[in-house]
Image (cartoon, rainbow, N blue to C red):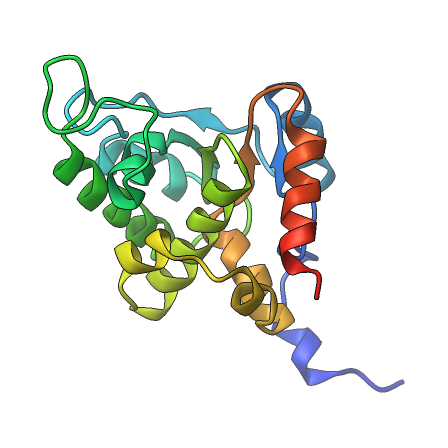
Length: 196
């Protein structure tokens, strides 16, 4: 019997980039169980940045558990989209701090080093935010400019990466939570962005 040396160094099977990536609150526990991943832990956001503290996220990740994080304030600050108050208003997070903090969160997750199932589970509203997070994960893993990657994701480039690289992205972004009832629409939008 012949054994591929490449397979000897690989751990258990991991999902490809878009496989079981997008889910809602009702389906996440079951989907993660299929991949033998612990139930995720929600990490509370800080009011200044609108994102969870780095130490809190790192504590969850180093425990081998996915960390659910709200990323919309950081995405809004980087991409200039509406949806959350930015600019340091008393009722919302500071946009400059939110943008920097989102980049730091992705960097922390990319260096947690635990493997699939211990990455971020960002809450996203649509397919463009999902691509932004995946692009930011690639930048964090390769030492590129995370904010620039989040601001201008390139789905074709991301999907065009080799299988090992696509799987490695999932070490940083385990899966993505989206609003209930939006899973099919967002999955279809992700698939459409990769066609042609």
